[in-house]
Length: 189
Length: 169
Image 1 (spheres, rainbow over the protein chains, first blue to last red):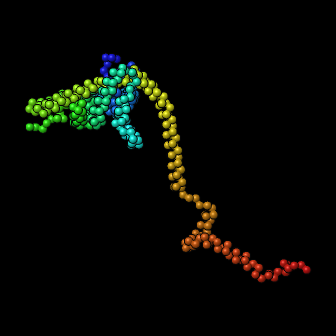
Image 2 (image 1 turned 180 degrees about the vertical axis):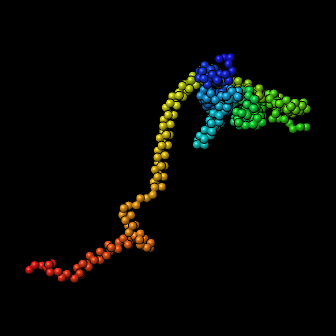
Image 3 (image 1 turned 90 degrees about the vertical axis):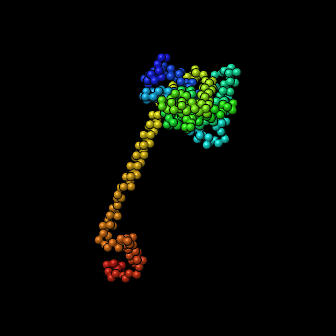
């Protein structure tokens, strides 16, 4: 299984091969979590969303037709779930106007994850998370997603356009504008 | 100088551009210091971000997978509980709706059946001019009013000359 490509593993998952599913989870769990984290800005939500994406992958692996790369297909699931989550969050925010998004983001950064790192590592982890949050918060959801897919996943503009359901040139504009914003933020630091 | 190909710079860095466009951007960069600086700056930002993302915390992989396994295992059970129930409820609701609709349409479209008395009255007056139908309630009560008049003046009627009805001596 280790030698198989993602696409081959996905076909095995469609045939209900649990070993292939485990292998795909192992390969993509961190990246799926980070992508969701960068879009929704919360550890717990990102964990739930990425896990839900793997469940959807398990349930609908037979629909993967192999015309695109597995990563394009799978990250489309993650992004869709993030969009759904954002819509629900907006709905709740309208009902509860006292809780602002930025406060939630700060809270989410401070809350530790399930594992117990050393105090130094925890301080560094928080610093990185805060810096990233500060930087990514200035971007639109489309810019965040496009940049994450390019920088972290190494997807091409065409693949990003397929995931965001926009034209290739629009995807490039999202990436360019997002990077320009990040450049400003990094200069301030 | 040609327009700065700012948007295309990222694609240029990632070697995604078609050959002709790549050559065009390359030629522009040779003569434009501003775009060269921007290109280098975008490359640095991308590298910095990649470095930060590498340090981005992620959940413990074992705990993450254990949670995922639990969620996946719970999924068919949940489905077994609510999906068939929802299906039966939907079918029952649809059936009840269909019956209610049929009954409503049936009642509305059904021709009203007249009672036996109504039919008799209609037969009796069918030969009379249509103007009478307007005063139908008056017509139906005419005989009653007549009888009442007779009853009121009953004692004023003259005695009949019937010897057999006279009292015996």
